[in-house]
Image (cartoon, rainbow, N blue to C red; front, side, top):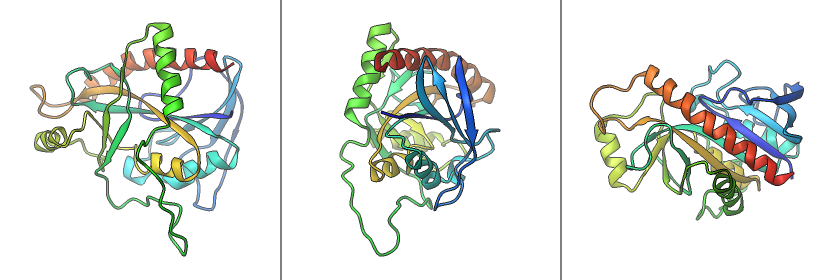
Length: 244
């Protein structure tokens, strides 16, 4: 097993991660968002990729998702944990909560969504977008360490980079969505095409627009992410202990 963590907003580094090397790579689809960082965390080899770039300069709709997944595949990764900041819709998905989602609805547009664009047509099964065994391992790690996580939830992937309107959030809620982010797709689908096991840890940064009074501020988001990322890093640490 070779593990990768794709870090999103709020996760730009891992505590006690021993960096062995950083490698600028190229793929048939171009360059990934950042150099691949190879290292040891709690004695486990893993690869870290910053989804939005080393300086957080790549917007969700500008990410080269194909290059990111291809780069991980090229170096032998077979397990991917995606970390993402999200907005909460469901009552038990408030700021600071950790969610292990199990479904996706894709509302993004104008993104390249497949590795197969020329003469080959491939229809992947996407009934369960996240790998059940990897989700189960994350949930077991949470239970073992008494870290509170929400098991399951439908991730609405919006285009970004703007946040949603109150009316859009009402529509997403009516559609059955529980949380809102901007990066689940096509990342999850490409991981499935590449044959990679893939699961997500979502940290709720704010309530969806219109669910509470007032505007959503970046200061609020950063405060909630700081709180949530402490729990998330602890969860990942326990997860690594379980696979040693």
